[in-house]
Length: 227
Image 1 (tube, rainbow, N blue to C red):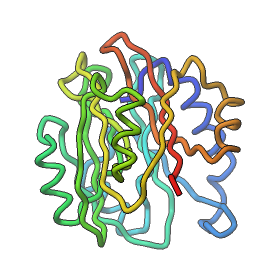
Image 2 (cartoon, helix red, strand yellow):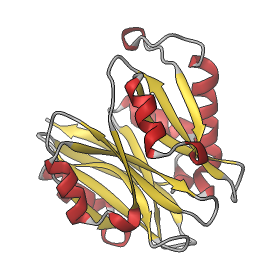
Image 3 (spheres, helix red, strand yellow):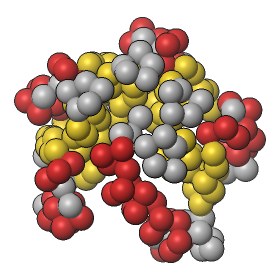
Image 4 (cartoon, rainbow, N blue to C red):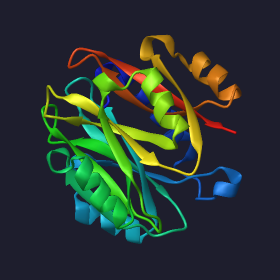
């Protein structure tokens, strides 16, 4: 769950993306995308799969309506069809991640269901590959730990909140064929200009997670491939 500290930046980025591209046809070669944004109240697993059959690819969520707002799920039009599973974080320990991964289910993100005090739902989509996962508490994932995992081919793919409203974030890594270098930077130190400075050096933004418990602050995670 993305915290209120990161809300302003996240909402601004999504607003620009949706305003700029919503009326464009999907054409990745030209960098044009068509989007749907749908309230989490209207996005059950069956709705995910209805959208997936029509080529709508889930790409993430953001919080609307301020601190007590609810998540909005974002889909973009693609040339492929998709099959999805949405599973409560209470039913998704590391062992469950890996059971799903063995059957080709790829973790793609999470969203908060049920309003302000709701819980996270993890989203998986069907792929042609099998996946191995690690799920690690944010308390055990400083930047040095990110880089130790990256050197062994563990790719950071996102986080979800465990334990309900006052729970803590769990960072999710999947095994890949590449090695990765990471930077984790406080949201207080990452204005748009800093994003672009990092981008010029090949640092790709992946996601954010909350450090320091319920009243902690978000850390932005960037990755860069190791040759």
